Length: 593
Image (cartoon, rainbow, N blue to C red; front, side, top):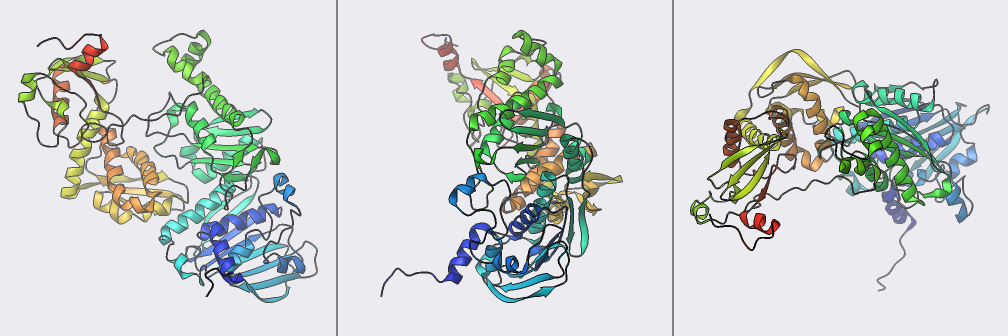
């Protein structure tokens, strides 16, 4: 028997559908783009069963005639291209038929459509790729596509879908992206019969003003507050709103990039963004960013990925330079000290010329130099030191005796040990100490305190179900919360470890970053919550510490399982051994003790 065979049309179509249709949100994205390409001004979405049971998109676009209604479900159907060269000139999301065939291959689909002014519409039903019926329908201008029983004929894919809350969040996120990309369009979203989102069209003001209003509607007032407007042009038009340096958040979940209104992911754009903030952020803080790039269709390639999420720019360097340069300029304008230093090229009020140059010259994005757990950070070479044994598994740097030398910039604590030097970052060290202490307390059973008034935390509609899906886990940690409205979380009780309830906003954003990975969420949810508490309660940079407090901090750090870094991975201690000091001063060896 021959081992090579030709797949049937049914099997081939289901395999091809898997490249585009991964989950209900993939279908919603494709249908929204079809509606926008059809010139719709109003788009209504209704889902049931987190999109598995049914998903319906209704628009008031140009509609289709009966022949097009039937053809759009056929393989390779298109209204936009006739030859290969047309792919480089597309100025739309795609074309009706690009994804409808793939959707129909793995679901039951009904399409009803009518052109404006037509006497009647047309309705087509398909099941697993086969057209079951095609008949006249009421003349309602626009198009309605209903998708039911997703993956009914490919159960292997159905079981790989995540929890209902996760899939609901992905659906809401797809609509939020479309709303941010198109502030002039009206979007509504119903889930299980309840209206979850309703974004009125923004019709007045300049483009950036409309973008900001839509950001306020989608992401909430807290995240939109203080965003810097940016506009520029260099062969293409860029407009964006980004966080000021003092307004960074603990998650990169609020970064959106649109090229010709298409939501995309681009490493070049992300690097340009982080390059501009390189000297202005720590590893665990990230900017909010909503950016729109308008490029000629032949200056980028959107067909490098089946889902058209990733794109390739023809002139990557120009795109990088413009994005990074404009954000840097906006940050400089917000910081008069840095602006004056940039003009003079010298240090100004503690700002070094190196820091200023980092805003001018291209350089790698910020990367933390994270030590490995248990790494020996200080080699002690003296006989006296070697006689003092550290507990099993502990790093060798904490072997006494010590001598406190002082504090640098009220941030770094300097010690001598057996002729070597080591320096503690007082905040990172204190954060590690409190983190392990709080984690131990919570493992014993967290006590919680009720708030006099509920604390409201405003989140995007797509984020709320992700947090609530872990409500039981958070309750065991001491957090009691409930939804209030469609985009607000009410915190009713917090762990007794909290000193300031308002710090919960920061914790909620950290949880979003953790819950974005559902596999790790259950494991990391507790850790992120405790790390946030420890960070807020720890000694801060610029806090003055005396010798007693410094030595106490060092002694507490010695008791930690991993004193090399804070819970977020930032280094807590640096060290120079006697041998390293001698080498730096070009001595043949360390002086005798």
